Length: 123
Image (cartoon, rainbow, N blue to C red; front, side, top):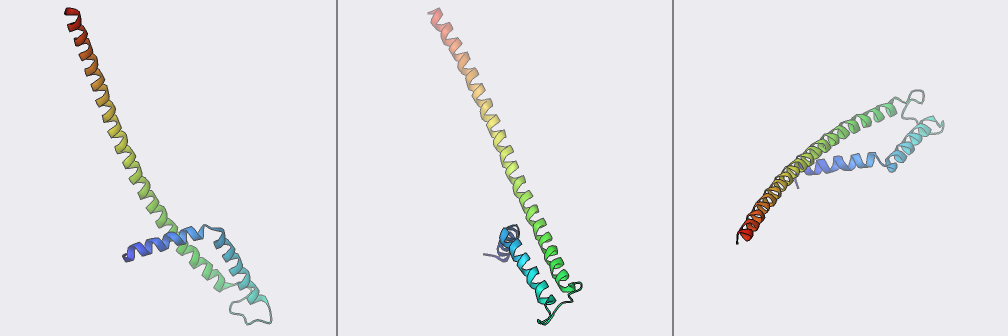
């Protein structure tokens, strides 16, 4: 398995996880823990409880990364949709050709039937 496939699968897993209830719950727990840790006076603070700058930075970075991965996933989906559309169009074209062939055969059968009836009447 090459690096590209691993990266693509990892991105797809991230996109799928990001749209799940587990992700939303984990973000809520993370933010609540962060805020409580930095607000409670008996715990050492690692962020300013007045503006939570580090938390803001972390959430902004996560949103940026998620946006890029979601856009890439959407682009891959559009490519797959275009491939499916081309396949459908080719199938429709082939079915149209088959339908035309059936019409031609029915026309030939009609002509042969008329000729056979003419021969039968003449005999």
